[in-house]
Every structure is written in structure tokens, then in C-alpha cells.
Image (cartoon, rainbow, N blue to C red; front, side):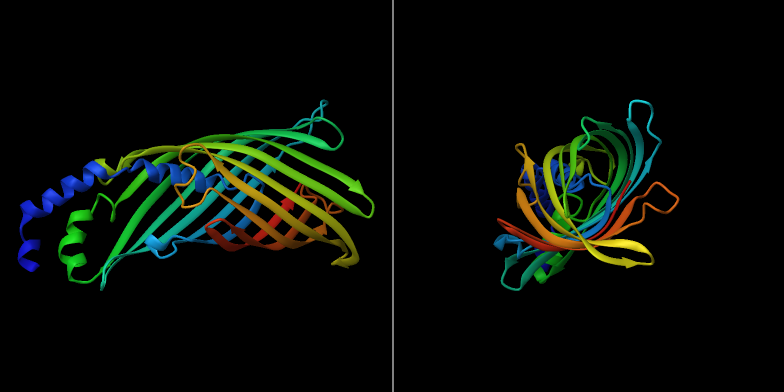
Length: 306
């Protein structure tokens, strides 16, 4: 094996074969799908476990920090806003090549975007929210090999093709959402639905092989039932919020993450702070369970509304 590893011609033959069958665009579609998860302005962290026997159940962590600034409504009642989004993603997968031979691969993506949109009241209960975004992202892959074959043959053969690469990319996208809120004493019902599309394309990469472009479309539905608790914290009324929702990816690349839909159920404690000076009317802290075909996980959210 060490002698084979020193044969540069043999290693290059392997690399040529991998280049021919390697589809880097799947990274673009996968990242576009990850940043599409939700357009609701809530700070969140979520952990997903994908049921995939070939890669020993990959684990995905997603952190999102959207910060929205809402401007005063005009005579029409329309409220324009700007939103900055910070996103950090990490995907870890383990691939067993042969007994005693394993590749542990870790993908990370850190990015930010700036968007603009407008809240358009259609009725007293229904609001249309179109939005556009543009940003940049840094993607990196790091692989660790276990075993003689991995370290002497696979590592030099796969480097800067399938593993151990980095890339800078731009992201552009848009969404259209419908928000519904209506009181049914003593509870309040809220619904949020959105259609989001993002495109990702590299402008710089450590290898031409890992240059990619991709896009993803996501359909997201979130339902909330708010019940007052007749209690307060610091003088602010508290409510218990029941959460339920679902997310589905559409299009030919919908399973690039190993799943194409998931559901969420959870609860949040919400405080009405509208009596304070400022545009934020309520904040809440909650947790969710995530489940679906080939996917499970959990999430924590810090919610706010205007």
C-alpha cells in the first residue's frame, strides 16, 4: 500500500476518475435548501439527524440570526422593512469505506445577507409580505481519514475534489409570504405560509472541480395558538403559544440534504411588550421537536414581532 501511494500516476488516474463522476453542484443545491428553511424573523438554533445508513446518519446544525428593521407605515398602511441575516451551518457525515477504514467529513458554511421587503395589509387579518435578499457565504470542507488506505491513497486522491476544499459564493433569493392573525377569545390564532427561492453560485474556489451553482425552492407553513396565562413578568403579560408547522423542498434537487420535508411541534412562552417605547411588540422563547421521513431533531427559538 505505501508503494502504491507513492505512485503519482496511479493517484492521478484515481483523481481523474473521481472528477468525471463528481457533481459539485449538489453542494449549491444543498446550501440553497438550508438557507431556505424559514423566512420568519426569529433567532434560532436547530439540530437535525438524517437517517442515512450509507453515511452513518449525518448530523446537521443550523444557526440563524435574522435582524429586522421595520419603518413606519404610510397612508396606505404598507410597512417597508430591511432585514440582515446571519447564518452558520455545519454538516458532519461518516463514511465507512472498508472495515477499519472511515472518512469523517465536515462541511461548514458561514454567511450573511441583506434584504428588503414590505408588509402589505390585505384585510384586517391577512398581510402579504414579499421580500428579496442578496449575500455572500464561505463554504469549507475538512475530512479526516482512519486507516492505512484512507491516509495513503484516498486522502491524496480526494483532496480538493470531494473533500478538503473551500469556496466563496454569492446568494440571491426572494420570498413571498402570507401572515394571518385573528382573535377567537380567549385564544389568538396565527398562521404563516411562505414560498422561498434561493440561488447560490461560487465566484472563487480552491479547485475548479468544486465550483458550483445551485438553487432550491421551499414551502413553509407555521401555525400558532396563543393562550393568555393571566400572569406577567416584569409587568408584561405572558402567554403560552402552541407551535406546529411543516417545511417541504420542491424541485429536482429537493433531496440533496437527504430529506425533502419535515414537521415541527413545540411551545413558546411569549411576553407582550407593546407598552414599551419601541417597535417590537412581543418577544418569546420556545422549543420544537423536528420529525419526518428520514429526519429527526430539535430546535430552540427566540421570537420577536412588530
